[in-house]
Image (cartoon, rainbow, N blue to C red; front, side):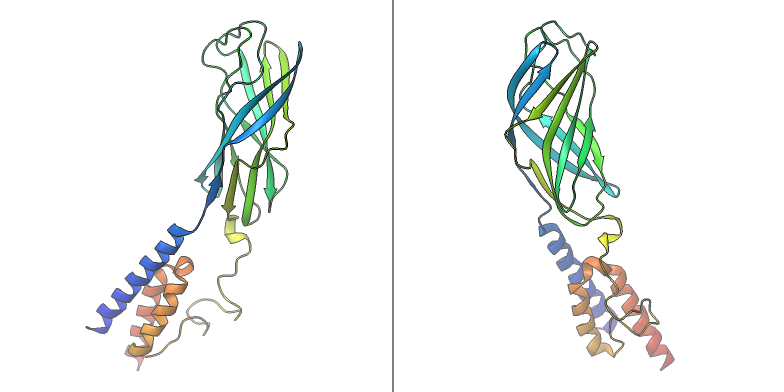
Length: 233
């Protein structure tokens, strides 16, 4: 097999191996958690338990977080017409991050009968991590605004996270991809070795271990670099 074909084959194998590692890495752990809400309403205190589900979808440098209620909470002594009720909530952040994330959603798309548990629509918000690591998302305070009144529902059973997500901050959160040599670029003298065809196979094996950082572009750079060295010799 020619050097060019062997280089291409090894680069493809390294990329596939790196992709398999990437796909196999755990990204999130989701769990539906029962949340015991105590609600302060205009007509007195009410309570309700609803299972809460939180999901995440990658969106640019952040994540689109969606919070879902599987059962209704609180109720109204009068019918709430279409569009009369607007919900919002907070999600408590834990792990490498802290604070809260605000999530919002549409008003009710159908009338809610009197004295009936209010079904909350899915609420969403965008979370942009400031640090890389594991972040927990736990149900926080639910706020329901309807007919000029405000109902506040607070979890009282210290629920655990409905979602635990491995996140990466923009720029890798301080991840050093250039090593400790202090140099970067093809003329720095650091990184992959500049040797002959036999040693290039070893270099590509090293590339396979770092393919998540360098990708196929690293293999192309190595091949062109070797050819340039051969031409100059």
